[in-house]
Image 1 (cartoon, rainbow, N blue to C red):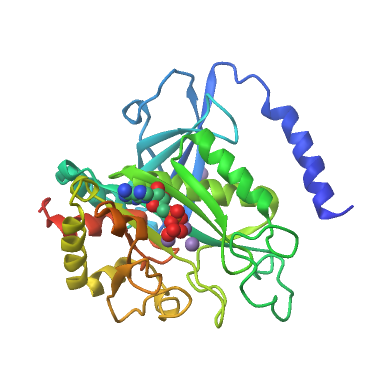
Image 2: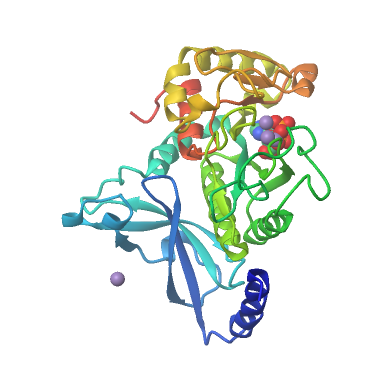
Length: 361
Ligand code: ADP
Ligand code: MN
Ligand code: MN
Ligand code: MN
Ligand code: MN
């Protein structure tokens, strides 16, 4: 039997159990982010109840020494629920619970970037920040090659693959479709998907999201993607330059606006923000992902890592003002620098802190 037949028959068998009555109990899947920026999760049973809020949910814990988040001699890390989503795998009333990591001494865990981000978002809420992140990623087969690539050698050069349609242009569209539907079911503000420039590379967009919601929705969307790819036997890579050479890297373009930028005459506020970003370029690059120097070369629709540039409709710049925004004179801008593996809490926090100062200190 071919491996795909095996997966199909196992899925059919699994379905018999998925519809069993849960007898007044729900399953809550607690999701958190580990030391390396991978989603982790575990499940627990809770009594069924309508409209759980994060405050109703128990604080839980896990073995942080197994995730690189704590030493073995003091390994308990606490999971503090912060957001709830309908579970597309088990179906409602089962839930996904996004949790922050806290140490036993009452401090946020070293890798809990959400805590600081939430404080900054609260302190600057009057500016009503909107974010829209474009998550690029590459699907790999079990041998860590991009899916559908020859084991030795390369596919034909880039060109036909971006927004491609048809055999030989795209692979694994079933994963992309399943993920899109699962995000909608979960209430993720997913705004679109497209095939990317490098074959086996895809993108989904989440936004506009307000404040802390951006990081929450993107992390749950990432969790769903990993979980769905597991069903299809593919791996998800957020490596910003998965294949060296003449192949596009993967980013997390971050579209950003404040209330002032979205109003008539907003361009003035967009330009002020870009000037502030320019002065902090190095600090931003430091939190915009690992291995980004291999991606930000100035080629393949990127700006070079050592220079800060901006322009209307310029995809070779650090910052792009969309053409339509340039024409209208208000709207938003796109920070093209973040790598696909960067943390949305760190990006959105530093953008707000750069524009409005460290108001939480
Ligand atoms: P690109 O042309 O760079 O590929 P996409 O269409 O992939 O752009 O993504 C654009 C993103 O910008 C979307 O996530 C969208 O929600 C977001 N966006 C649109 N308007 C705003 C705005 N005013 N403020 C912040 N983000 C916005
Ligand atoms: Mn155990
Ligand atoms: Mn895009
Ligand atoms: Mn893209
Ligand atoms: Mn973009």
